[in-house]
Image (cartoon, rainbow, N blue to C red; front, side, top):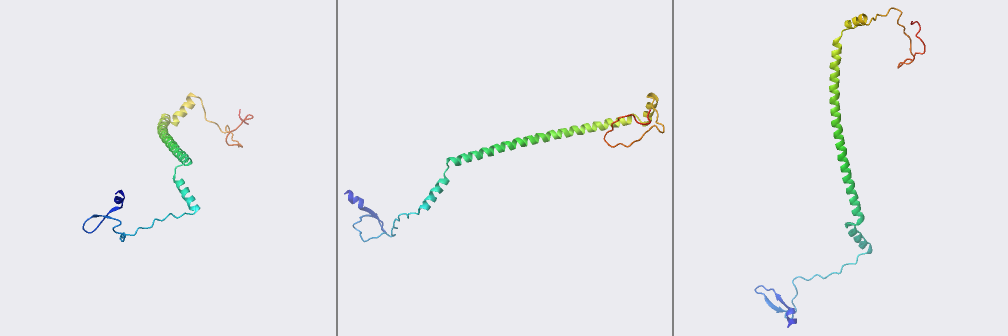
Length: 165
């Protein structure tokens, strides 16, 4: 009985489904011929090796993981260094700006003091103070001696200047 149930199958007709036996329809062929099951063709050894290499190349092995980790660490370190250097540049730019403002302030103060000094005494006042209070006099003809120096930056005096007493 169990054997008969194994051989039983449904036959689809145009009207009703009915139960039938395989032995009952021996000439009936399937509507679509079954494709023969092909055995996989044996590939040459080089193709197998290439396939194995391709599978291995897609996998994460220890060398690849270490290389990837090292590259990631280098990238993070370079980003940190770049941010540090950019911060240093910004702080130095702020320092330069503050020093330029100090220079402008000091230059303006210096110019104001110079204007005050120039306006404080005239040449006539200086002449009166030099001749009256300090006892200075103008030089007479022959008191000024000119000579040619070999170097322009300084003069060493080894002896007395001729004609000066």
